[in-house]
Length: 217
Image 1 (cartoon, rainbow, N blue to C red):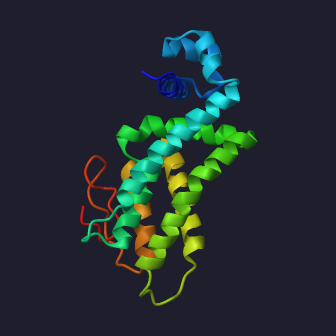
Image 2: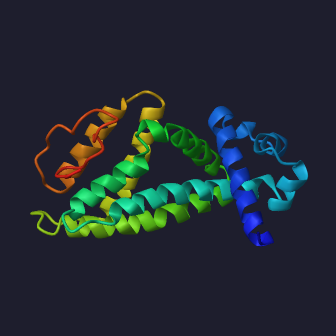
């Protein structure tokens, strides 16, 4: 195997160890020594992959953002039968991390978001992750709301939707909202945005509760 491919694989393996530790302890519990132990590599191997702890954290955060972004983008690859509004709802639900299988990922994301408040480098990484999602949301909102009676600013609404998604992630993690309640909030917001009837969101968590107004599944 070429050395460069092995180096990339090693960096990703170490980043996964960072995420597991962050899920268990928060970022304050992530040390180079503990990461090396969790990844079952030497301290030297970690230091050859990352010059500093911050560089390691930035890479791990980029991995999380890439994974979430890929899922959201997959939701945006619409079939001919899928409307812009449906694609928007699917993608917004995906980045809200409300499903049980994404709960650990949500905890890790929140740990990184908190650290980004005091780390310019992490903050820049987060902003870079948000940018393409915001543009995709603005495009879909513009298309889905083309026949809306009152005009709207798609870029403002895209920023609002991203902020709502993040807020719902936090509220579910701390137990203020149950996952199905968070889905209801997202569903109602999209219904009002697209001027559709507000109906009960489909099913509890684990079924298709993440569907947007008018979603076909």
